[in-house]
Amino acid sequence: MKSDEIEFATFVHGVEFDDTPGVSHRDRLEHELLAALASQTPRPSRVWAIVKSPLTRLAAAAAIVAALLAIGLWIRTTPPAYALEQTIEAGRRLRRLYLELHTGEHLHRQAWLEYGDAGKVRNVRVDFHWTKDRTTVTVWKDGKTWNWDKTANRLLIFEDEPYTAKMLSFVERHDPTRAIEYIRKLEKKGDVKIKIDQPADKARPVVITADYLPNTYLIEAEMPAMREILLVDQTTKLVRSTEIRSLVDGEYKPSGIWRYDKYDKPFDSGIFDIEDELPEDVRRIDMNTVDFGLEQGELIKEQIVTKVVRAFFEALIAKNYDAALDIYGSPYADAEERTATRKKLEKIRVVRIVSVGEPVSPAPRGQVASVSVPCTVEVEQNGQVHERRLDGLSVRRVLGHSDRWRLEGSLRTR
Image (cartoon, rainbow, N blue to C red; front, side):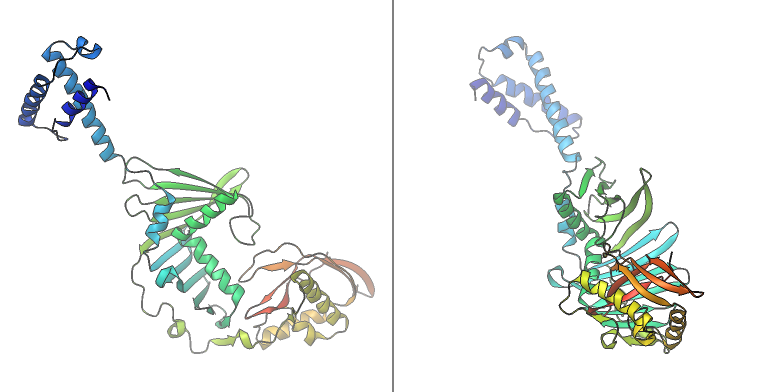
């Protein structure tokens, strides 16, 4: 550094100032500037040749100090740049989270999430409000699930690894701090583009826009391109809400919005124990004891789903309706439902299996993803045999039996 630059740095360092100087401070500032200038050793230079008089020097120094004041004020009023890691770190301290999904005016879903040490998921409860008249409650604890269909007055109890994986996936996608980790992983894979907008006003939220490529928004889901808009509080670094939009006809249209209003607030006692909520006459079914579907054994998934379809139609051809009912329909159907399904099957006169097509990519429906299997059969109608194609059938795992598969769907032909 040159000698005149050193002198100038010493001059600036010796000047004390605050952000909002009063009259006395301005007087003191002027005296300090004059004293500092008077103490400088004159040296010929191009700059000081221009600034010859003390008044000119004072004006120049005052301008410099004013610039420094402005810079200091700008530094203090401009918030530091937001980074996704800040929300991830803030979320690691949380032990409880309540969230709601709204679709229009309808409260579609409620969820309570509880974490143990090191952020491990301990308890999960999700209430699905499908319609005004239908609600299901699902509680997951340590790998065990209670699924209560209020409308059907039915409680399913089961331990199922694929279902546990889906519950943990639900947490990963819908706990907003974990969701940010998730979209960051997808960004590295090239499946998501992330844009961050941070207003200078700290009272306004940071806006994170995540654009998903088609079929990447949910696991095993065929979905259009999706967009999430997350609003992050600049003080707490926690997400306030997540708006979901789907790309329809070239435009992102609102699908719903998740709201997070109660970070780390205590839950009602017993929220993860629904026994006190159940009616006395609820029908309890331990799915781990249900004998239903076909065992996969050493077969790969594509082989077992094809085998299930063939076994069902072979049972219809042989008019073995009990065997067909052990493959097709609901494994938790009551006697009345089973009788009604049997009557429908007895009306179908299958003569021959023409073909069973290749399984189609998984399509999520309900609790466990199913695999569609197109097939063609010959059926007898009014004394004549007709070839009919069925596209509405699918095969899925049996709850509580990850190695067993069952058939479901429409038996309508075309």
